[in-house]
Length: 220
Image 1 (cartoon, rainbow, N blue to C red):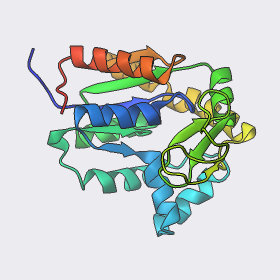
Image 2 (image 1 turned 180 degrees about the vertical axis):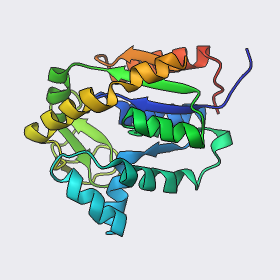
Image 3 (image 1 turned 30 degrees about the horizontal axis):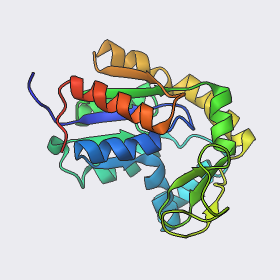
Image 4 (image 1 turned 90 degrees about the horizontal axis):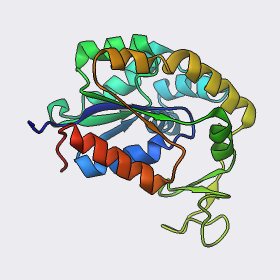
């Protein structure tokens, strides 16, 4: 089987672990991770014109409009060598965005991580993030050695503003309506790989690496 570079999208409901898995997979396969969530937060923090628009939607749990998402993500895509591979996390968010993306570059893999709404709520309401290195912890599943302090860098942990039950439920409803149809879209194109996400971080990562490697994608 010919070895190929990963040009993939990664999607799943909030709390599915796609951010964590995306970072590990990108490192393993030697491709840049382009995460729409991190790009949005960077634009907001830098108080750019795009960032101010993004914040007006994110702060109330609403989906960012397609044209604004496209502008933020495509800005980053222009900065990477797409022929060397990349992994997109959080984009495309709907079939229309996927069709737009296909006109720019064809994806050769779509990874779907599946979890229940109840599990999504449990994970997100207990999530804590490092203010420094962005490492994720959980009040039940992955507690730091010292409460409120990151094991990796010693910075303070915080609860993200969007980890609010009302916001989470609104985003889950939007995910089922807007994003879940991506599974059918990419299945029809023969590039969908769906896995069950209600397992440990390590076992999910091992499953993904094994299955993606079996498809002929080259590691770094």
